[in-house]
Length: 110
Image (cartoon, rainbow, N blue to C red):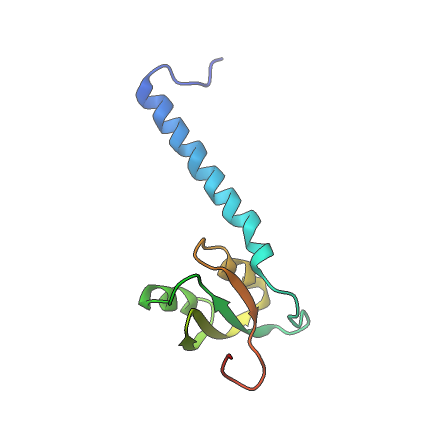
């Protein structure tokens, strides 16, 4: 049984599928390395500071609101409160997230 398609169109589609799956796999493997140590693993929800390589736009804020309450932005960071510990990898998964760390106590970042 030959799995490789005979037509050029089929090989292109198969190549695109392999590339997509590789990209998704890389995003999943890279996410834990973006999460900084120091989270209280016993807490059901945590407040986080998400750093991007650029100033966040409305799209990014809306994406983070799926995981918690966005309480502000500053420079290249977004403050998100009430994020479940189980969702930290989901927050860190997008390629445009550089780092996820605990929100400094005392309120606003920096």
